[in-house]
Image (cartoon, rainbow, N blue to C red):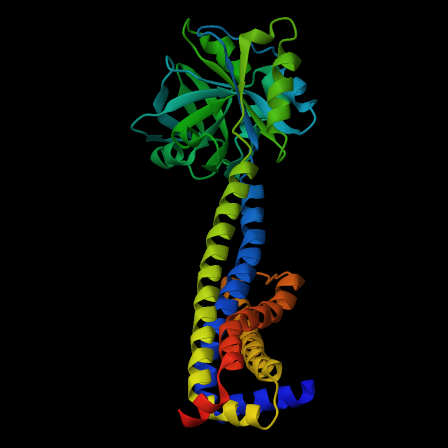
Length: 391
């Protein structure tokens, strides 16, 4: 009997291919929206996760709790380097009282600049700022310990002074002291002011220029992803175990919470849109089924007169609705998978989609079709034979 019902349902659908396709359209669009948005969301989520991981807090800022004091010990770089998760760290300060002379000495010629600032930084602070050097190299811990008069120039200042290389031993006047330029910084990820500054070792700056009463010392630490909060807690005790309150550690919040909120909001919006489209598809199937019952009332009456039971007639309409939903779900699934792959290729992503979505799509289509076909099946089963034959 089930085979006969299936054969009748299939024959009925193929006799009206255009109507069948239009009826399937709602389910197809709903399933396609569900699968495509889920697949694209999963694919994009992996990419977003990578971007957020790259942008995770990887720096910690340290500063004195009160102005005008230097709470950093002389071995700050070494103490910070011993902390787990630290890649580099050190101290820097702006020498506001010291001007960069508008004259640079390169062999027998000189260039001029419109001005510039001077920063004093330990080797760890320079490394933690993630500089990109166009020429030369950064000074090391040996230069810091000896107090060498060496300097790094930012790209802007170097260009104004006409310094584009360091192998001819250029030098600049900082205050009234001559400093040898050993490197040119082309870009800096964390201290962009360096591009308009000269950077010298802290030991040299303190010996040659001293400190001002209101001078601000700050610490900069480059940490591994996910270690910022831990390093922020431990650094104040590592640097000043006797007076941890003299230092403040500032770490950007970990963006993973924000990432989860964004992903959840996007998922909710996507699923809500898919449900709306699926409901529209269910209404289309239900409406089409009711119209089919009205148009086929003579066929239904003849089948009933020939001995067909009410359950058999109702079963045929349910089967037709379920088959329509299945075909719509399969078409929607195929189209959605092609769309996900196309978007991934265009964006150079790796397409990812959960296997449960692939299996759920046709099942949702069948379930939706059967539920939408209940009104038509109920109406076809309760019609009167004689009335339908006369109508």
